[in-house]
Structures are given as C-alpha cells and as structure tokens.
Length: 209
Image 1: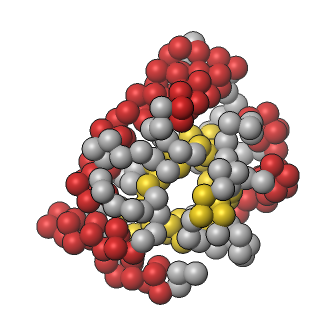
Image 2: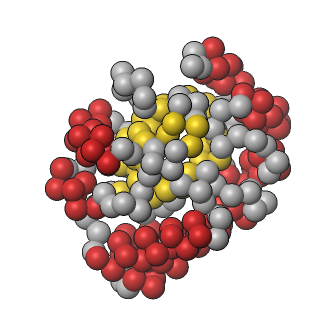
C-alpha cells in the first residue's frame, strides 16, 4: 500500500522493536524482525539494532524527542533536531531513515517550529531521512493541529483514538499517511505493533496483509 505523500509502498503492519528481557536474545530477536520484511521502528534501544539493520532491506523508522520544543531560538531548535537525527543514524551505522517522526506535544513558538522544519529539510536534502512525520504523543486539540500541520510532513502517527478523531479530517484533506498504535478500522492506515519477543513478531506476521 502507498503510505503518505512521499508515495512509499509500505506494508500495513509495522514493528516497534523493544529490547527483550533477556539480553542474550537480542540477536535472534533482531534477526527475526529483519526477516519479517516489515518496517522496523528502532527508537527504543536503538544502539542494539544497528548491526542487524545496517544492511537490511526493511524500511527503518524512528521517533525524535520533544527537546526542541523548549529551544529559545530557531538555531537552537534546528541544532537539537539535527543532533537527534545524527545520534540515531550513528547507532544505525549510517543507514538512512525511511520515516522520521517529530513529536507534537504542545503549541510551538514560531522559532521552534521554523528551526525544526529547517533541520528536517536539511536532513532530507542530504539523504539522511526520506520522509517526515508528526507524532501525536499526547491528546491534541483541533487548534493545535490546524496551526502546526504543514506541508513539510508526509505522515502522522496517532497514539490514541481521541487524537485519531481529531486529525482524521485534516490528514484526509492533505493526503497524509496515517500510522496508529491501535486498530483504527481504516484499511488504508498502517499500524505500529510493539514487540519484544519472537512470538510477538510471529503473531504480527500471522495477520500481515
């Protein structure tokens, strides 16, 4: 299926890799994740996944932090977002990110917004990230979405049903891709499954479309 305005062909189901409780299982678990062929979200324990995804054909997805939302200037916001991307890529041995999601947790000042957009556009131009998204990490309002959804973003990640109802009309209008952490009931949306065991990966693959 086509995901977002970047027109990537992506499976409906994605894996959010979490570290197994037993560290000795990391290699086998990561190998199973790669073998699934599904997009892999690697923000949690990202340094552990690098050796396994470096040459993997899977789409690689990551979420940034909200630190930039406290920046006091455009340059500071830009530097913070750029540093996040570089840190993630260094853990992945330089492999580019298919989608990088920027967290949206509050109304941003214009300088914070402009700095973040500048960093994302620069990373995109340099081939470090291929597509950008916004992540609704807390309950958001229509006013917040209307003010901060801009053409710089191809997709949105929604973590609760209340936000899904809020953003759905906007993302439909702008033809953005939608990733949810729950079953949305919309066939064209993708779903992010949190997994920390091989059994969890196999369960997701069993329902893979």
